[in-house]
Length: 249
Image 1: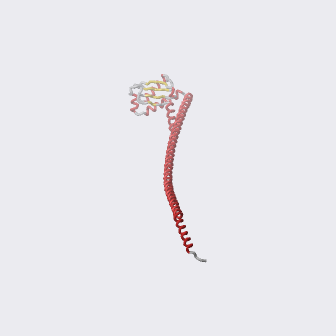
Image 2 (image 1 turned 90 degrees about the vertical axis):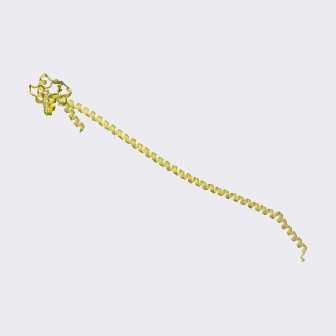
Image 3 (image 1 turned 45 degrees about the vertical axis):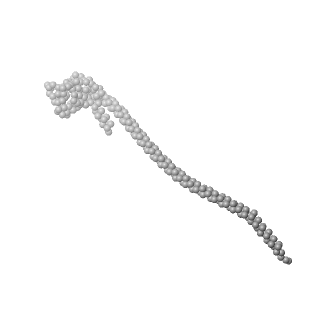
C-alpha cells in the first residue's frame, strides 16, 4: 500500500476549511447565543435577587410594623384594662355611697318610726293614766282629797324662801287658785285662811286677793299662780312628771 501525499494534503485542506466554516458560521453564533443566554440568565438571577431582597426588606418592615401594631395593641389593651378598672372602682364607690345613703335613710326612717311609736304609746299611756286617775278620784272622798292637796300646797308655800313669800304678799296682783271642781264659798274661805297661815300672816292683816277658777284637766288638787311663779299641786302635774321620767328612762 502506498501513501498519497496529494490526497492527504487535500483532506487536510478540507479539514481546515471545515474547521474554518464551523468556526465562522457555527461555533461563534452558538457561543454568542450561549453568552447572550448566560447574560439573560444572569439578568434574571439579578432581578430575582433584587425581588428577593425587596421581599425580605418588605417582610422585615412588615414584621416591624406588626411588632409596632402588637405593642400598640398591648398599650391599648392596658389602657382599656386600666380604664375598666377605674370605672369599676368608680362604680363600686358610687354603689357604696348609695348604700350608705340608703342605710342612713333606713336608720332615719327607723328612728322616726320609733319616735312616732314612742309618742303614740306615750299618748296612750297619758290617756290611760288620766282615765285611771279619774276613776280612782271618783272612788275617793272628794273633800278629803281637796284637804290633802290643800295641806301639800300650804307646805310648798312654807318651804318657799322668805323673799318669794314676800313677793306673793306684795306682788301687786291677785293670786289665782285653780281647782279640779268648782268650790263653794265655804271651801274658798277655808283655802284663803290656809294660804294666809302658810304665808305667816295674822288674821287681821290684809292678804292678797285670791281669784278662784276651775279646770277639770287637773283631775284633783290645787294650783297656785302668782305674777312671778306657779306652784303645781295636782294629779295632772304629778302624772306629767311621772310620764316624763318614764320616757326619759
